[in-house]
Amino acid sequence: MDSGDVLVYDTTLRDGTQGEQVNFSAEEKLRIALRLDEMGFHYIEGGWPGSNPKDARFFELAKEVPFRHTRLTAFGSTRKPHTEAASCPHIAAMLQAETPSVAIFGKTWDLHVSEILNVSLEENLDMIRDSVAYLKHKGKEVIFDAEHFFDGYKNNPAYARRVCETALFAGADMIVLCDTNGGTMTHDLTAIIREVISYIPPHLLGIHAHNDCGLAVANSLAAVHNGVKMVHGTINGYGERCGNADLVSIIGNLHLKMNRKCLPEASIRELTHLSNYVSDIANIPPLNSRPFVGRSAFTHKGGVHVDAVLKNPMAYEHINPELVGNHERVLVSDLSGKSTIAFKARELGIDLGNEMSVNKKIVQKIKIMEDQGYHFDSAEGSLSVLMKKIKGEFKEPFVLESFQVFNAKTGDNPPITQASIKISVGGEEELTAAEGNGPVNAG
Ligand SMILES: [Zn+2]
Image 1: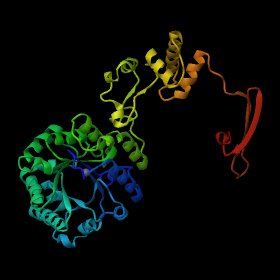
Image 2 (image 1 turned 90 degrees about the horizontal axis):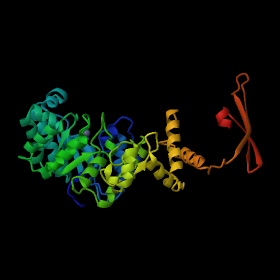
Image 3 (image 1 turned 30 degrees about the horizontal axis):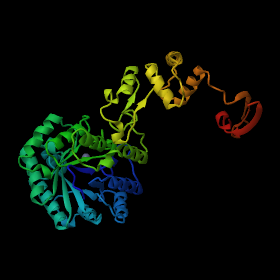
Image 4 (image 1 turned 45 degrees about the vertical axis):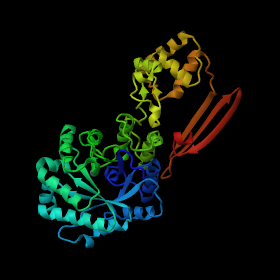
């Protein structure tokens, strides 16, 4: 495994699936895992085998797959209170997944220990110590997720520190500081991390941020900037409530803005494809405004902007879109000027020549039609027809001679519709008819 400069830990298949509308079958999880492996992700958290049969089945399927770059990781909790780690079913389920790494989360916020888990602060530490030590004894790499670390630290810094040190001294390989509720401001998170690295070396630290304040990516990058080695997140930021940190943005920023390596260079150009691939499998429409990879990320609509980017793309683009596998787009609307029309005509293969009068007429016509309620920004076919009409090059592909639609309904029988249409192409007439369950269906 190429350890890289920053370790990327993907939890799309576990934390991501806690997001509303995000569901993957075991087979779909495997497809995503293979894609992430191919791109060089260091860790993939495949699921929580103790919590549901689907995740257990995913790990069974994954046993047949030789991952080349990634360390597959099973997720779970520390042992139950007042039991032995060796006899805890949660921990047994993690071991059955037969992954090289395991991630376990432990309570770090004293409020959660006393009020939610309902055990003493000492018992919580014992649960963490026993669980980590047992999993290490079983030969696993152990990643310890310090749940609610930042909220815990604000409330009781000494206890949050003890939790992390307990896991570390029991043998944990990584301590991941989690902003589980996603409510931590970047300046507070930075200040806390600076204190933590005075007692835990930053190369043993990870960050796991949620996006409830829209800061998950910023918080993750701030943590890395302060030395944290491992960054958790999900593709497209899928996750519970407002989601997890979006790894697509994090990777783009690390490579292109912070000069920090995490994935191979070729994988950066795959980011747009990856984002679309995962949203396709999740059956969630891609977000047009998603940074770096969204359809609108390098799309220009305002006439002044288009005029400028056609002279020099840097004028309104923060990076070359091809670096992340995206591309520039120009939209036509009533905000467009002559440069936009010239650009689109070239793109649509229409030669406007040097006749500025044609270009001007097209601009004027679009402005009038947009005022009447037409929209051209996602209707390139209509734009092409309009340009050809104004240029005098448009030929009707056919002439509509006549059409008829017949609807009938009798008794309990389903309605019947028959439609017929006659058109002519180059003087030759064609008549066709069809039946259907409604006029559109029949037509
Ligand atoms: Zn989480």
